[in-house]
Length: 258
Image (tube, rainbow, N blue to C red; front, side):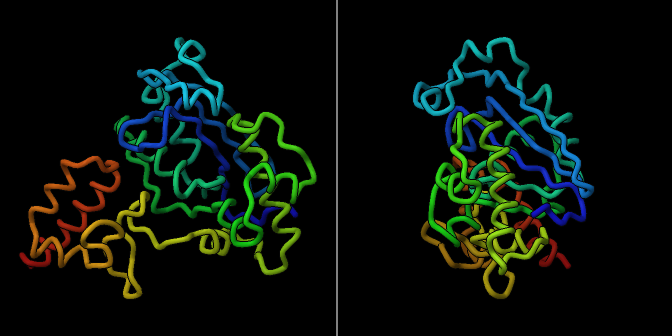
């Protein structure tokens, strides 16, 4: 089944130095951009992360320091990459938990303010897990009846994810060929920030999703424990999380002044 799109949908996958948003870097990005008329654009680009690629990471994606020694940094191509995603919805495999937060963190570090709040996110892994409980390799075999060659190559994983989503739409009558529906269906939490440190409760109020204040209102916690804001701002949290926390705090201060 071909996708029913109202605006372009970018499938993408990242290979990185690790899984820590605050410290690790992107070494490869691959995307397939699908237009509402069905036309596709794709590209794969590598980056010099400015740090050693740990052996554990290389064992997964097979990219070494030497492979990217002469590549540009992400910062050097950040504006170009942002234009690829601008005005689009975004899809990937485990992308809501990892790839999207990592990408946005790299944009912020590069000084590019990409407004992700206008995007809808479709996580094909979440759809798969809700329906079948498998891995991407198994998903590709299950839905597409193919073996995934070069697994953990960004390009192979990206195109496989695209094919799996189309096959999922063919297989399940309950899945609507609509990005808004798929975005809602593949969201596991109502995150306020991309990393999910804050989530919306049933009243659409931001609450903490970790630590000693888990489940408690962010605004109320900041009112009675003002030092917690400073602790988080100095802590090892993604820049996006800190930006969201600051915006919530500013809203609270404006309310008091008003």
